Length: 511
View (spheres, rainbow, N blue to C red):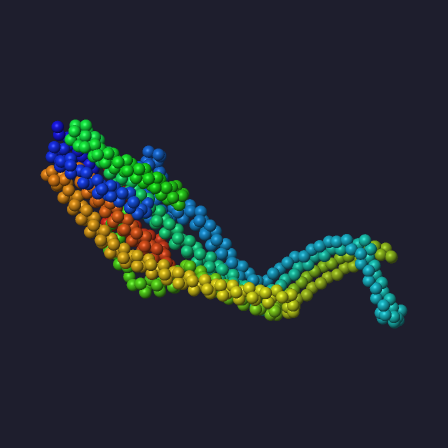
């Protein structure tokens, strides 16, 4: 009896032409190793196949199809980025506050109260027509159970105030820092968008690979069982085929779970805006051929433009101005002041109903000199000096950390090019081995398990190469972010690279 076995859509040689059963057990350890190598490949999950595998669960909104589209959707829906936007808007208000410090302050005062007033004067000299001059006169006035009403308009404008000048600088620095924090949040969101974009694409690619392997091995297990029942194979081969099929089913379930998690993560980032199946691209040859540039150039860019370093510099400047402000606590201030007011007091006196009326109008310059603050000034000075030392230490740490991360990203990118070339050679060799194994099956020198092993290795090598190329792109984006150069233009450049020479993640399970 002859049976034809197919794997991966390719018709294989009849069982009568296959190698003898005794050759199969020698492949067991190798089979298990290859199966495990696929299951433990390091993964960065991505999106496209997720949509094909999960299409039966419901339609997905098709909007973002490029990395730039994913980033734009994330910018509209990510809660962390929304918080950064609110912080930036709040920081812009510091500029208006700084400008208002030197503007006139106008106030309206008004009041009413119940009042009793008494006044007396002795030794007064009184002079009136027809009465002559009276010396040692005494005057007394009283208002009992009276009402007092007043209103006034006052104006004060600072002319000279060193503490106010320092506070203005603090507010302006805080406004600048809010803009830097906004740029930092933008770049972090772009990195998260890229990572989740490629996470889902790689997860989909891996799931498709496992689905194809699982289907092929399950068919092989059925064929082996049939041959065992015919007496052509020992029972150990059926155990081996069943174990391998069960292992792939477990890996397939794990990959499906990882795909669902990556899909959920991307959905959370973009507010549920998901590309359709097969619309996310994985990098091709272009990703492994782009130059890195000189390390010294990237380090200079990181020192000059990294948002974390610039934020640390802004904190140092703020601490300097706070120190300056505390040092000027005893400095005199000069203000332009003006006031226009009216006051009325009415009530009862010993002689009957009475009232007093007053009007005040003034404009002038007022000098204020603090004399004693109860030790608050000295304590504030100690605090600001310590804060300044802390800010300077944090700036030194930020510079060292950014330089270290930039160097690591540059080295990873440089080594990654060589690694990608090596994996490309490995993928080519695995494909050549697969072609040779197929030929060996046709002539009877190789069996079905040999072919499955070769297909497994070729697929694993291809997946490893794709992941290495994805890592190259991510390292490039991370290096750009460390240098303060990551923006939408950079994402568009990556999209153009993906469009040229890239391949789309597979869009169906069971191929």
